[in-house]
Image (cartoon, rainbow, N blue to C red; front, side, top):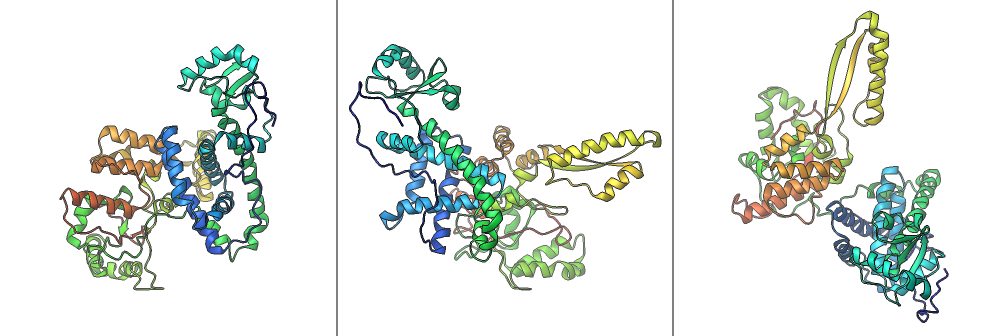
Length: 514
């Protein structure tokens, strides 16, 4: 990169940056344990960034957040290995998140944001060195030209709250189309097609280059993964790679050591005060509820519709199985928010994340069409259904039998996927969420920030902040109990845990709304 500064300031000694560009995978031997642990540590950083962005944190707050996340999660007992951990973890997650368009988009956004704030934390000399590594061949503005535009540059700086430029401030002349972010924010002076970019804003230049490179690299990695790596590593790395994108990174709730037992008489009370919205349509393995109590509880509920004898024959086994007392005797672990969000409910299912899945209500309507007008109208309705199918393939499917009936029997089965928010609004209202808070929650839902929507629900219900965010139904329950205990609302002793949400199909377990 060419930097003309001889007329304004003496040259600066080259400084090696601590921020790698991840151009090529390192030729290092990595233990399988480190392969996974390094990736998980970096994933904590990226998910922390995602949460910060979802909460609308300001740039200064994001810079502090990134610095704290990095220091907390990316340390290594051997200081000389910190850079290796950085590089290895990036390439492992690149492999994890290259597999689908949605995963690539998220990883690209989070890694770019991480790079942006790490670049800002570098000293100016290291920043210039990074620009050189990207081969950004922009000339620095000379002294004479700087003096001619100094007043205008000062006006721009004042308008965005930046220090006034002086003779030592470095500016680069850059084609304006290469800094759309700065142009859109009116943060640079443009003259004859060139933007005058100060040194403290060159991050936009570098980030654009980094994002472009990483985007292409993810596509290439995906090709290698699908063509060779996935099959070659099917017994070793593939299971780890495929599981990491949905990994839960919070506390382990599968085997709590200490928790107060919940009896049948407590269920209704704690359900109303401490269950997250997703748990109000699920079978709960406990929150400390013993197997005998669970059987007694569900037998009493089911007997109202199916009778005691049928319950013992068709449902009791499933409940004992969930407690690890039947079949392969697995004591099932609870799902995290990420797992629940990514698991789309099927026909007859009563699980899922309410903030993602309650927004849509499927209604089936039948219309009888006169024989004389059947063909044309059916064709029109069929195109509408095709439209719904193309936009909501994960929710609505039309079978060949329905298509056949559609044309030959002149009965139209119209699948209307109504993007209605009323169900979710009603559920939030029953929880005591105010109208204003509901609007904030729905805004997060529309922008697909489902966990943040749940966090806002928690804060509205408990009138208390939840800076860590909600990442697990058990966390919601435990944090709720802590708050309620501190207010002496429900004296249930120590922190409760052990709750496992088991999602069961309708034919296995009748849905009960607690």
